[in-house]
Image 1 (cartoon, one colour):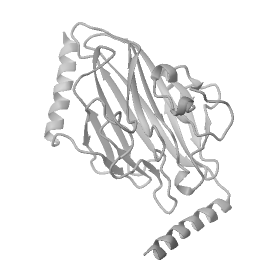
Image 2 (cartoon, one colour; image 1 turned 90 degrees about the horizontal axis):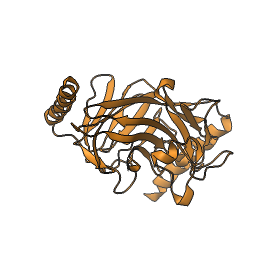
Image 3 (spheres, one colour; image 1 turned 120 degrees about the vertical axis):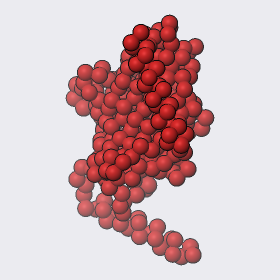
Image 4 (tube, helix red, strand yellow; image 1 turned 45 degrees about the vertical axis):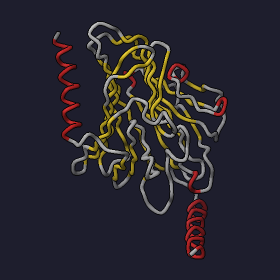
Length: 300
């Protein structure tokens, strides 16, 4: 009884906070000094109207980790053999009718998504997500919570996946391929590095969380978002060894069964940075930016 009261109080408090915040907002950008992070109503890290994904160290080099890649940056939930993904272009950007609220204050940048219970695999669940980072940080923490709102039924065989098709070098003219690696024997970290610029992104989960890292190929023209496939770990969905490749990087957690009136929370980090690159790359990038400027000038 106490657990049920606690969950009901949590959901009521969240609903009230959304009302006080003005019933939520459309997509927006969290602007830090080191990172600019777009957030959409489905919880993915892309501001769709403003075409802003994740930009590291905003400045003269045009880079965006989420764009133009597909499936952008997504979250996928599987229950009892069925799944749905949010953050995929098209109808799947916000399939759960989530509400998005900007809760930033001072140097703490934070976005929060929450929605009413929805159905996956004939079972009802609710999803809550918080995205936060400091203005000077190069790390984004994401907290994902799955709630079983039922008073009698158990959510069976629950998975949750997160992933991104990293295209940080596309706007520099190098194309979408990255060097994608699951380091050492760990399955709780996966990294994608631009081979020309050294721009990288890590997905880093806590070892005790039971996370499984995967690198997905575009089998059939699409990168995997099904958590059952991604939960196998390693190279999946047609991915083969060797780099660079235009693959997605992913993390999956198998949560098992979630009994009525209970919830599970998963936290992980996106970490962004740059390894040293040859001076020739900077000359190329500067020349590319100069050509863009000349084109705009003569275009007028």
